[in-house]
Image (cartoon, rainbow, N blue to C red; front, side):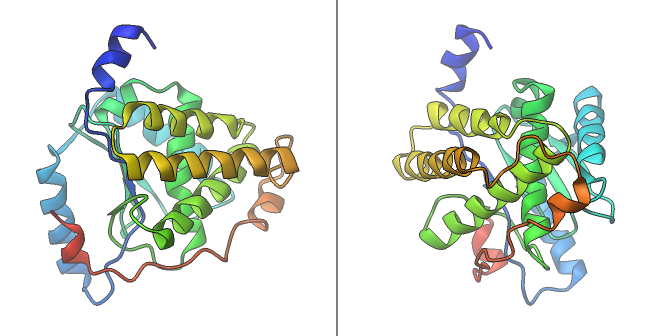
Length: 224
């Protein structure tokens, strides 16, 4: 990652939005809202980055999620990632281009953490806006780190992604929430609650975080 890119990246408005809330909407309405949301962010593109992300996702899903997850690349230079209730994961082109394979896997694992922790992931919302959502994000960080460890990828990769977001954001609230999440992950790693040597996926899956809070916001309110 060169200095010129870092200078450009730090001038970008950085928001990583994850998780969701679409209770009360049928599948057709959810699909229409998602399509509108995608178009507002530049639409999706195919190519090598989409294939790369999908292969990483397929690897991480083994032993954790049995239904298919599709990874889409959003045609945007912003750094972001999202999860939708139809099990689509969206990664911006900017984020995919500037992460190593293990770091991109970490971003995907965080998104998978939302799906693993919740029976019904709902629409995207901006992270770090309040304590409730911070709890959801921290829970996805912890579960995502266990997914990584189970597949031989260091949870430190997720910390590096969060640190990148922290450095490149000028939003004080977002930076504060990212700092708390980084500290929580570092503490979990040092305490041994995330076993970096773990290779047994089925055993790791039993340690997923089922205690994270759920979101109650309305879908239409999340689309802006």
